[in-house]
Image (cartoon, rainbow, N blue to C red; front, side, top):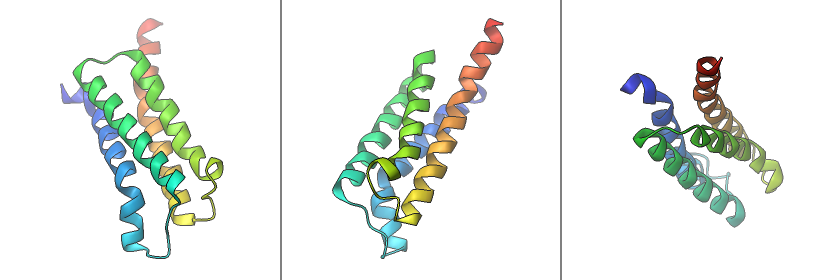
Amino acid sequence: MFKEQWQSLVALVLGLYVVVTPWLIPYFSPASTLGPAAMWSHFVTGTAVILVAVLAMSEFRLWEAWVATLLGAWIVMAPWTLGFASARVFTWNSVISGLILILVSLGPLKADSARSA
C-alpha cells in the first residue's frame, strides 16, 4: 500500500511545510518576513495541497495529480506574482518546495500514461 501512496505522503508533508513556512522561516532568519498576501497564499495553497494529498490517499484519481501539479506551479510563481521575490530565503523556499511538489505529482501522471500505452 505504501508503495502506491508515497507521492501523496510527500505531498502531505510538503503541504504542511508550506502552511508553516511564513512563521517558521522568520524564526530562524528574523530579517525575512512576508506580507499578508504572501502569508495567506502560503496558508491557502498549503491547505489545498494537504486536502488533495488526503483525497489521493483515500482513493487516487488522476485529477488530483493535475491539481497538485498546478498548486506546485503556483508555489513556484508566487514570489514574483505576489512581489516577495526580493526575500531570497522565501523565494528559494517557494521554488524548491513547488518543484518538489511538481515532480512528485508528475509521477502518477507518468505511470498512468505508461499504463494507457
